[in-house]
Length: 101
Length: 392
Image (cartoon, rainbow over all chains, first blue to last red; front, side):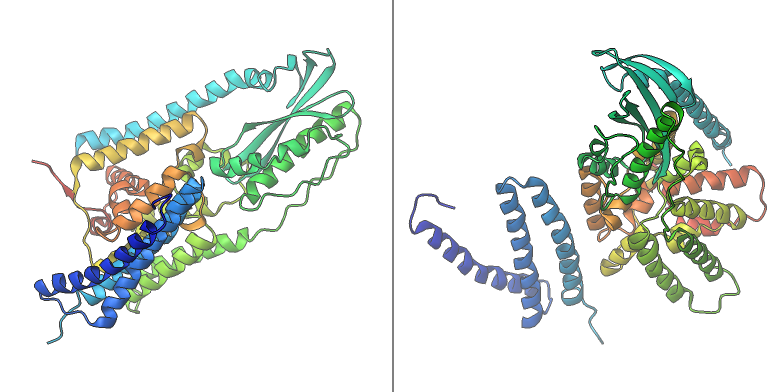
């Protein structure tokens, strides 16, 4: 990320990791403002899917960086599409669920 | 029925026939030029018999023999030319005609299958392995080369006639039987005699179709199958008749019963889209009149091009191959992803907006209307056809 530096890389990833707390907390608040109630394990599953999607994108672009552009696009396509489908299903099940009664 | 539709019903076959005739004329005019252009090393091409020519090497003035051999492949007959010298050595191998999907052929040619024969004697040809993932195309290529070499060997060098290579057993018959059974089940599922829960039965049939027609056989028919059927080259043999049978059964059942069995009950790609749409519960996209006519014009133009160039596989643009059997170009790959993602937003986007089968069945409906079938079940078609919106 920061070639030639000793500590910037570590600081960058630590800050980015800490920001994930804001991602989850922000998502909770956002859903609350729309009157949606999501339990902790449901949020954990959705966040897991988000992290996994990020890893797929990172993996694809790493391949591109290694001059394997075709493999990179296929990696993103064939792993990314199931992630999008699973994420949609999770949101449908946990956020837009039918309220009983 | 609109007057313009009546005219088009008669006009479209005329366009396609003219395109096919133009293509035939083009091929016969360019055949000898094509053979002469196989290599700059060949000159003074002179026919000796059917599919057999004599030529002169440009640099050594050696007499050469050129033979054309063909074998049924995935999309129709695959034709190659083989050039052999006086020493019975293979000098050149060139693919003259292939109707297979280009990515299959690229795989076979990229792995150097023809190159394995160059320099070898025609009475001692190598046992070349087939290419995994393009088995039918590579088998057809190898057999075509062997057939052309055998033609030269028997007629010019007095070699004994080789027995016809044994046809490898493929599950072709079981495929055809299973496809017929699927159509039979679909017909029964839409008939009055069906007493089971129709929604569940349809869902079950769609799942079976995804597994068999989609992933297992990879035999969903496409615009290339329609072009192949109209082209008539399948009469010379194709390696698999599964997609053709699918198309024939879909058309015949529609013409006889007015029911679009394939799109509504059997289409694997439609089933995948519908399944994804169930996650979000999305509705069908709006389709304006201009969209309908644009799609129809696109299909007729592609069909005419496919018939003129006698290249059905080249006009295929559907994402079925990439979705189920991982075959297709990068553009098709991008299209497949777009359609799959779009299926979460609108119901069956490919079927309603882009699929050539929609245009085909719209045409067949017009044919049925024109030739006066009193029993047309318009309601059934309207169920499977997207609602058209007249732009005001």
